[in-house]
Image (cartoon, rainbow, N blue to C red; front, side):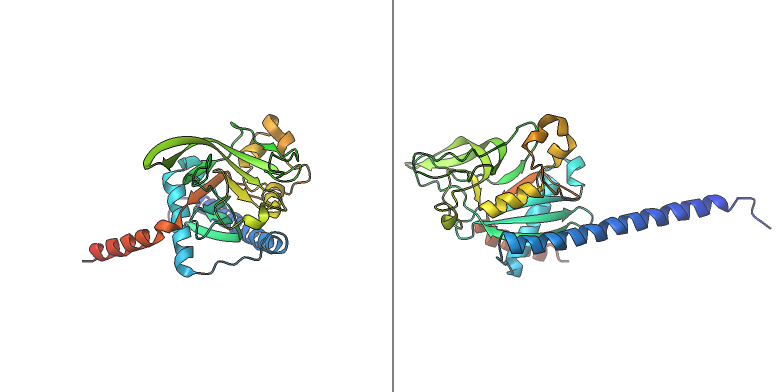
Length: 278
């Protein structure tokens, strides 16, 4: 007995699904090519630094995945995007540009460089807080004017260097055996090319995240953290690099973690896995 159900709708559905699959596959391949291209540019213009320790890289990826799952609003967490990762551990002081694929929780590394986070032992200095910090048009950043401070430093880099402003953030501060919460203005910015860049790789800032001029230019030119600015050009397009080559999936998040606690986290994961065995 022949079916009276027309075959055409099935063909239509099949064609639509196939087209969607090809579209998504094409996007994934294009993004992979872009990441490879950015890696090459990063190594040529920013840093040749390589981080290869598999345990450390596993920890970093777990921190990124956990941050997007727990600390980012769902409608933003499910979007493929670039991000910046900072390890404030005094023994590491690393910064990484990466790409997060929400499907499969895949984290791709574009490149690593040295950074300087807060040195809380000095007067007026604070430890850089850990967490996930969003760069948005609700707080407009700015650019350095090239004015030297009282110490003769170009504290936020040469004229035109970008300053990403993440607003007021709470951070613990200990002095004289007492600990309290301080509020600091959290910035990501360049430092003096002569004096400051030589000190990258150790805690040195008042609480901000310092980067090299080359890293600053890379983040700025490719719009790594400028998703909200690109989505709202009427608000502050004047701040963006007019010659920019914005990446296909700009992001908005800086993740600050501390690998000083990596061993405890790893041990907990191993212990939890043992406990879960039947």
